[in-house]
Image (cartoon, rainbow, N blue to C red):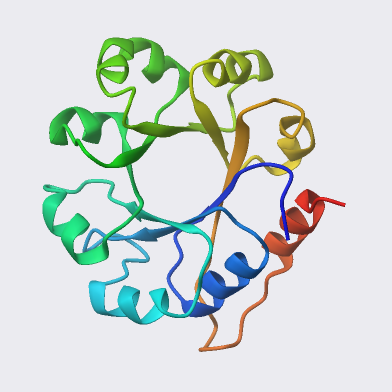
Length: 191
């Protein structure tokens, strides 16, 4: 199954979300890898889940991390997601990045973004970005819009712009409602 745009689902904390999203053709699955953060998935839980889905690239959501080397060694992600401020502190290299920033932050830290340009796979921006701002960013980078809601219909018309959604906790193992995710993913299915 193919989706009309690139889709990332983050904050995955259970196998049900991971398998559902993989089956729906989601491109990127994000896991919170920093202990103490809501939805944290420890390396053992992650490895147990990792063996049960195929297809999507794995994103280590590393907001607030002190160091990336342990995260990369334990989770072996395809990409690391962090804020532009985290990127400035950690100065990551040799791994593809998803960099979360506002449009204003992108402009403010443009010089630093340019230094890491070859490592940045996606910019993750809030849904407050205008279509004109998204087009401007998408001229240089692949862009993901965070939880666009009603704006999803407009976004599929902008080249190089995708969406980022969030998973949620299970009521109990194997018992999960996908109403919100399903609505968006079914809308994005290629006909």
